[in-house]
Picture 1 (tube, rainbow over the protein chains, first blue to last red):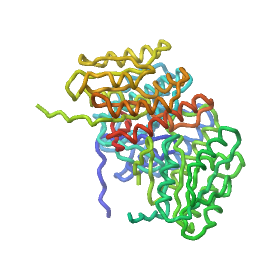
Picture 2: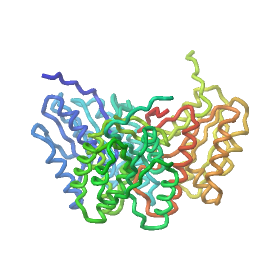
Picture 3: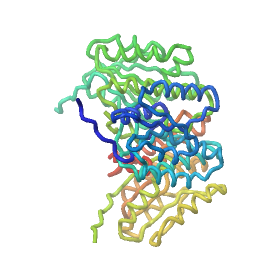
Picture 4: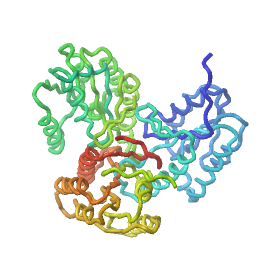
Length: 174
Length: 174
Length: 174
């Protein structure tokens, strides 16, 4: 039997759209003993979004406990059970939800950082890099991009491992 | 005389706009003995596009055999002559053409993968990474981004070498 | 006392929005003996831009000499004093200013390259990677993206060190 490589306390998987982020993060978690906690930040506002959520959910095998946390992500991370690895997919949707709910994103980010650092099990965060295109036309998209970028920097600084996904392949950044 | 480093069966060069992808891929191929096959997927719909195609074509020295394959890319790859290296530039334009022609992109991607794996010579694929900006407003752009990303993952998984271009410089991903 | 690692002649720090480019470049310069030259290309056209400039300026400690060069960047780099490290933040704003002022961007880029190569002190250039999203709808944004990408390639080819920032973390490209 191959030995299981234990996950560090905090892993951050960052990548573009359809870069294989979720799949890679799931593989990292599924290499550990189950149960595995899946914390979903997605809220289905329309049919396209619903289809994406369903596709992600259908891909996950038995052994996953799914928990929805469109806003109260730090609380969901702290819930346990103790020792079970926690996958958060994804931070950019969480930032969108926070902005729409008029929550303070910096404050929420600090709470997330604290939750990750004393979580009951190893945490794997997934997020979209959205800052490598042309400056968006509208102010809301620019604000979203700034908030997401600041949150990524905060968490990457604390993470034990940071992975940048390119075409389904992991590049180790840290 | 410097020895020529042979190309592996499949090389995938991915990068942003004006990242030096084409130039790098051409240099990889031109380090081999000619003739070299250039498979162009571009279709000129307007003057801007025509100028880009002409600029690319003018840069290429003698020794290149150019073949246009806006849609039937797998067939163009299989054509030979045997042993000649094949450069495909680029996959994102091919995906655009497939969508506009209402072809099944996943099916075409599977055919491309198969063609690369039993091509008559080493293959170098060039493509644009388009998934690292803000989510596009319109559904067609989102679909294009998803199809391109899925195709990139499929081919990167099969490639012997994957290169991510940054400001004209190659980063080795695989 | 820790020894100071001297900066090479030319360092190029490239990254997305809110990727920590400016902060990283400042840290590289501040590890040298002061004074440090800060060459700012920003022009405040609106309140959002003014706030960004003020935020950057407030973050910088004593020891910085700030010089504004929205257009005449090569001249500002050559000014000295001799030996003082020079931080240029950022090239994408400079390209924007050049386009708006109807200057020849390729010519200006050649002048910048020459200025970097015989600057009176080590130079650290900061720029935004903007080419990894969907092709922009409007021709001006496409032109900006092309000009910026060409300039990046030119300078990266000459730089002694090229760094790609991901979530506040430096990846060494060269």
